[in-house]
Figure 1 (cartoon, one colour):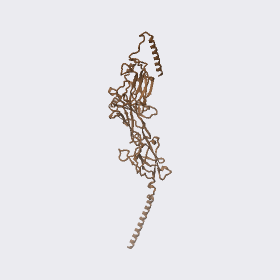
Figure 2: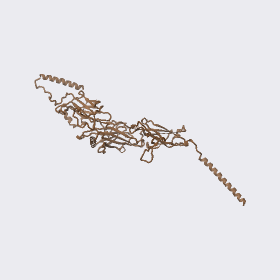
Figure 3: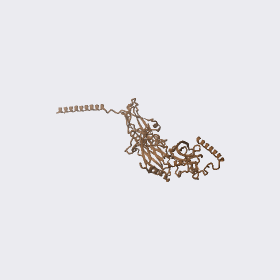
Figure 4: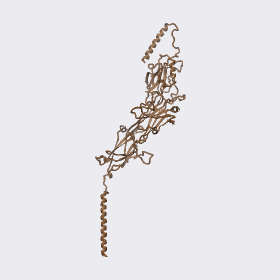
Length: 536
């Protein structure tokens, strides 16, 4: 800093002047400098070296002392931005140190002493962020991780003083301070289970798995804050009765209790134009203690898991991509401001990657081998949709509801039968893409990855389809809202061959013929009667 360099230059000049004066002044006229170095030199060169390390099960078990530790276990974490902010305290005075001590280690209170003087450095490939003498001076600094790479949970803010008492010689000061903050990596993950939700009538399950930062619980430390935030798509029912949240520790599994270990809040967004509802899971002091101790006793696989049920209204339209991104606030970082009661779309914390479910539609066009110009003649055809196995005979149908007897079609938009209208067309929406299941693209499709249309009613004068009609809904078309086109061609009844007449003309003919037969019989009987009478 130019001002700092200038000040130090002036200080040096002043010191030289004083030294020159001392050569001619009477012995004992000037106060000598501290011969033991036990008081702080305000013009001493200072530095702060940050060693950014990945948290493991074996490192970070003791508090740092400000000295460099060549034996420290440190798997470097690069691309972490550190911001240091000088605090408004004068550490050349006992009063300044007393001001810091009154905070009792509360970092959140220390931010009230922040000045406008800041410096930023991003860790290199060795995980180092080195703040040199040109960027620092004697004083206290708030150290914050202001940006971290994907899947890296930021460490808590901390305060460091330049200098620190040298632990190897407590009669002197250490102006070159080294710190070793740890990051939990691969800390936030979200998954979706939508394989069984082929149509919009079924529920989707979300699971959010979050790592737990390791703290020194043996010496009384605990987590100060732990929140999981999930923005819910407006189509998802946002009441807790529908969401059915389950919160637990896994590896080993420990069920956490609502209102005892955590609280649940669901609130509409306060951001204009944002139609999400935000679910916030907030650990209570009891939950924070339980989670921290579980991590200490466990491993990096000891995590918190939140499971949610995404339920929908029966007539919901899921066409397109149903996207979800959850976030974790893992510590008491003052930069991560969040109000569960008044959420906004500016969600702090460590986000998951977007988790997608993709739903498209099929457009069924009904026609006939007669290819009539009047397409309305093809209205009234009815179809059902099944998941199916493509086979030589068209398809083997799969049951959509194992709780019901028989093989049942998909319920989509609250109905399971779809009728052609207009120009012999019907669109069936909200079908999960066959090549995108449980949040992942399928690179290889098989004969199992099909839907089947089954014609249950043909238009007047036409025959039903003899077999199921396989088709696929693909993710790229689903996102573009481009329908899968299926043309179903019916043949006229009896394949167009006419049967003998069986209607009114035949009935009349038989009636007349019968009448003649009856009349003829009467005449014959009368003649025979006259002949018999004449003989007698």
